[in-house]
Amino acid sequence: AQSVTQPDIHITVSEGASLELRCNYSYGATPYLFWYVQSPGQGLQLLLKYFSGDTLVQGIKGFEAEFKRSQSSFNLRKPSVHWSDAAEYFCAVARPKNNNAGNMLTFGGGTRLMVKP
Amino acid sequence: ETGVTQTPRHLVMGMTNKKSLKCEQHLGHNAMYWYKQSAKKPLELMFVYNFKEQTENNSVPSRFSPECPNSSHLFLHLHTLQPEDSALYLCASSQGHSNTGELFFGEGSRLTVL
Image (cartoon, rainbow over all chains, first blue to last red; front, side, top):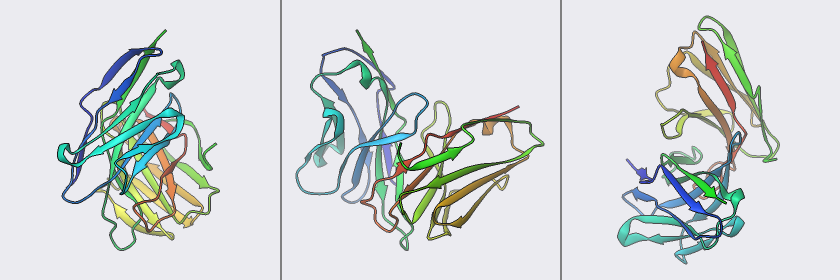
């Protein structure tokens, strides 16, 4: 069974500083990887996804993530954080479909980002 | 606005009540999902429906009963719940079939069981 670990439960950064959120996965094959963001009182919104090809993927809101197979990681980065980026971030991995049963995402526990002015 | 609408946004119920959560998607997707989001726990997949057929039941207690009358609507019927069932219940939809598809989430229904 696949699993996703986000080692940092909380992270606080200053506005304008760079950001890196860590994600490690356990999966037997090449995974499909996702980062979602959840603002307070909201559902989850997709930031970016990796399926194959270039290991550095660009997403919305200035975010990017890099897939590193050797480290089983898919860390999320942003060069300069804005106050509006304060939210909870979830890494997820998709497991194989079963009889066309839709998308089976396993989520990490989330990292709550706080931004200091 | 993600195209997935959940009602009610907030629900308080007693352990003997019967209530339902509703989800509607306007995206033309084929698959719909219920997830449970509890404090200090990862998001838990509860049910998956693909073309109105239930394809996944993730060992969910029978006090949660899903219903998918068509590809656009998904319900979660609740009865004799426990206080530990208090959580944010998220509905999502996707194009189905493919693992490469994105999940579109609603804003959730915050359930409190007294």
